Length: 365
Image (cartoon, rainbow, N blue to C red; front, side):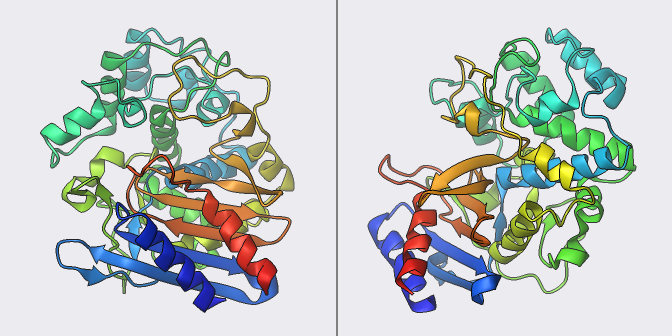
């Protein structure tokens, strides 16, 4: 398995020169498989080879961690999915939202976690190249600026109108996840990273190298970085605060992500099996906003998780902007985590193809 998986990673790096490096991790305990391979370079400047086990910014793959943590508080009665933002968030936050035209008495935690709140995405320019004065431009102008969650909320209010009334349309929004990150901090009295660590149960699941960058203390014995790139810009030269407060924010490894997604989809993160059922209940019958630029199908969207079909099997997981794909097929007890470390890939590249590729390797065994 390792040799053929390595050949797959080598093929991808050769086929796609925009890809600085390739990480692929396959976890299938029932088949005795836990293997990771790497190809390409960890750092274009030094030419240092990429090695298995490297760490990287997981970007939006943080959202399922945030969602699972919020649902852990729901199942213990500390949060209510149908509570309004007026109840859940600080008055300072809801006041900004009301200034932007949002009815905070009607928007609920459920709306935030299903991207149906109608709240504009402060990072919308990442998905919509027609926006020339958005968050991407602000980052390029000041890559080392230390953003706050409040600044990003204000950016959303100042740069876009509501997508629609609460519950009316689906539109992916990092602002939603940032607000859930805020309420985690408000409810637990600690940082978002520490709250996730405790509520998800890193120690119990064996997550050794996952942490909220620049907020939590770094774990011991960290592996080397796998540098990610925005075209030619090394992401590590950009302050992590651009994606730190719920929409993203975690650093991890393929192995840690595989353990988390497998445990999550097996119900091992929650105490009540009904909680996983809630998290994986797809929207269906909620139309996409006409301003949706991510290409998501609302029918495949659940609570900070997405359903995908590959190899005629159902998978659940999430992607990360800087080139991370993390999905589990519960039916096969198979988890695949891959990194291509570059969001700006040619149209012919399909980040989800790795799932079917791995299934093909397993079928050949």
